Image (spheres, rainbow, N blue to C red):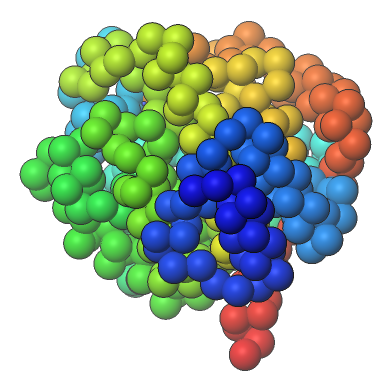
Length: 366
Ligand code: SAM
């Protein structure tokens, strides 16, 4: 595609003409560096039109790494014997939620490995009740894997607002390659539909740069987000973890640079296609570029950051991939750094707000 044709497509998409999947793939394939920069600038302009120069913050609490799944890429998969399994106590979790609220974050994400036994699901319900009793309770996003409709509804009733469950790849063939047989694409998609039915603000996402994945597959991922009418997106580069079956995937400089640039393009094109959804600039970007990774995600159109507020002592046992940043920084050090880096790029935190995606408000009002 010529640069001229690329700019036309960019403009028509920004103006609200919905691209088809071939055009989405074209948007993900800028013909030169100038076009790529124009893609990021156009997505940032749209982000600022919708959200201003403001960023929603969610304090991330990785409250347990105990997992019943065996995803081939994931550092907390059940077969990985190289990590110490932990579960934070209720008091520790509630303390972190309060810390996030005191920091002015307005929202927390409670993330864990996947368990669906009653002991676990009851515990999450109980925790939600305790967080709701804080003097200024933060909004809660859960990210605890696939659950029944009954459990999702129970968690909504207990006060959770949002749920994140990544589809990982919307191409079934790729999904199958990176999961054991028991983890199926159909189940994952059905769980996302249940999340929506239960009344959650619904979030999903994919990993970018998986072996064999092309820009065509990524275009289909964006098409999937659109078809599923998703409210929030969290996606980032795939990063091999040495103690997993995918730990030997290519990780040379060129491959990593491609994953990073594709991840930024995914953020930008997703912003242009889905418009008023929340899009996170994820830790995986920061892992590749510790100084500017998350900032570059924001400059490509993301509007959410999830600074870790968990206890340092657990951090190293929640390494989904190698090189996770801020392993030895506590919540307030992370906050200070984040504020400085937001200032540097002309963005500001939105303090003390839940930060709901306008897309959710629009679709539930309709
Ligand atoms: N158990 C929950 C679930 O399945 O949704 C949440 C925890 S799970 C570890 C969170 C996300 O980490 C996954 O959805 C996956 O996309 C991401 N992740 C895991 N391993 C990764 C890797 N090696 N590189 C990049 N992202 C990874």
